[in-house]
Length: 157
Image 1 (cartoon, rainbow, N blue to C red):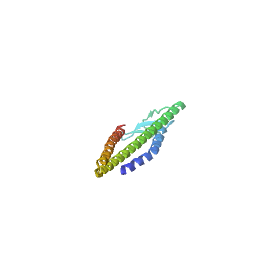
Image 2 (cartoon, one colour):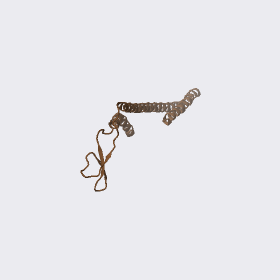
Image 3 (cartoon, rainbow, N blue to C red):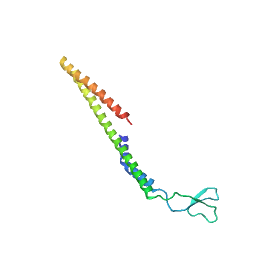
Image 4 (cartoon, rainbow, N blue to C red):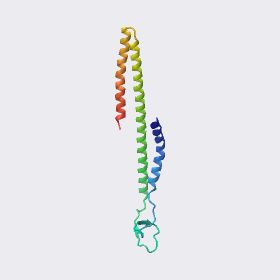
């Protein structure tokens, strides 16, 4: 039960997580600022936009600013990625629902088989026992089919 609640929470938080990832990934680098690299007195490499006076600095090359076409292409790629994630999440939800339904059907078939078997054992005549035995046999076949269907659904990626 606890696992089920956790999965529900994860599903509920997925859109927010996706939005945060999208915002972070689309932020990009700060453009138009000159950065300098130097080695301090402790021997550590420092990258800053305002080096101390007298330090031997090396200018760090930043990426050139993006053109409008590049920005549009990046936004299109991000929106396509978000759409793929949404489609994958929808497919997972559909699969989970199909598995849940298949499990319910299997359990219902097992309960019916137990009921038929109990009725067969309580039947007083041959005809009644034969009738219930036929229903038990049919139910066992149905249970086998439902189990195969469930196994197939659970094994698919």
